[in-house]
Amino acid sequence: MKAETIDWSQLPFSYMPLPSRYEAVFQNGCWQEKGLITETEIRLSESAAVLQYAQSCFEGLKAYSTRDGQVVTFRPELNAQRMIDTCRRLVMPEISIEMFVSAVDAVIRDNAAFIPPYGSGATLYLRPFMIGTNPVLGVRSADEFLFRVFATPVGPYFKGGVKPITLTVSDFDRAAPRGTGHVKGGLNYAMSLYAGHQAKAQGYAENMYLDAATQSKVEETGGANVFFITSDGKFVTPDSHTILPSITRRSLVTVAADYLGMQVEEREVYLSELPSFLECGLCGTAAIITPVGAIHDHGKMIEFPSGMEKPGPVCLKLYDTLLGIQTGQVAAPEGWLHRVL
Image 1 (tube, helix red, strand yellow):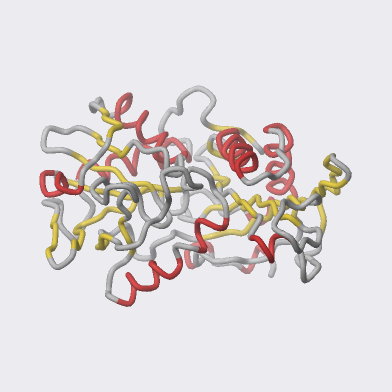
Image 2 (image 1 turned 180 degrees about the vertical axis):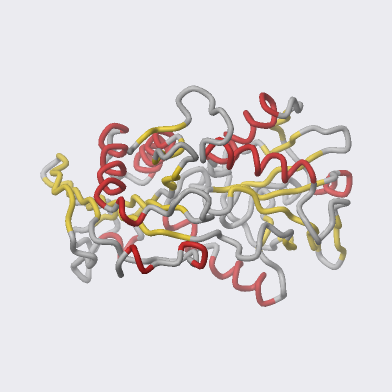
């Protein structure tokens, strides 16, 4: 596909192969950079570690066209550090922050024609990932790995605007107290597919998972962190060792406190508290903020006063402010925007 034929306003949130991507391979104890390549396919042994024991991890971030004509990424060093943390937990070789950011920059620059223009509502999505590639049979870590970064232009995660969704409290556990819930391994997402399918079959957009130990504390959903707004204007988000450390959530904590003057509480949030909150939202790279209008809890519905018709006023302010920072409409904190072009 040629960039000039794309209708940026109609882009779906889906994969579109672009001319180039970055690749490096880990062999004999060190990384060997291949740089930019054109091949979209990956050839693997049928006994590759990623196929047998799911040894894989990934990241997701976006490149934004700003109001003043720059192209930037948003806090990419945090994505790099999160991949490092994941690699340590999954016995995979680490990628340095410098190598990670440089690879992302190279892919953006080489596919510059496909960066959606400012104001189109579209962005360039970057997917860095790593997989174990050499054959294994017994349960063990791979010795060889592939690191790749590809890009694809995407439209808004939700077509038709940001509208509230309904969650359901899951009977499944997302992560164990000493498990891998805090890292971005593919295995965490694979185990959430069945529960997510069940939720959607029942008419809900997504699951809300509780802590595995007591089934009384809110954790997150299958693909996003969660936050709440109290009646006295506080921003509350769960604190747990089994939650993925969302870069969007961490940024919203700063936005809430420093830009909106809100009191922030990162603490345990009990399911029994939910009826007292005014607003609820999910947060992540893809949609930034998804407002939640109601949560189904085993036969009863917890409905937030913000309703199902439109985002609550605080969720909307948080969304507009963070998107404004990412696209250059609002002054960003020092170091939040990394200029690529």
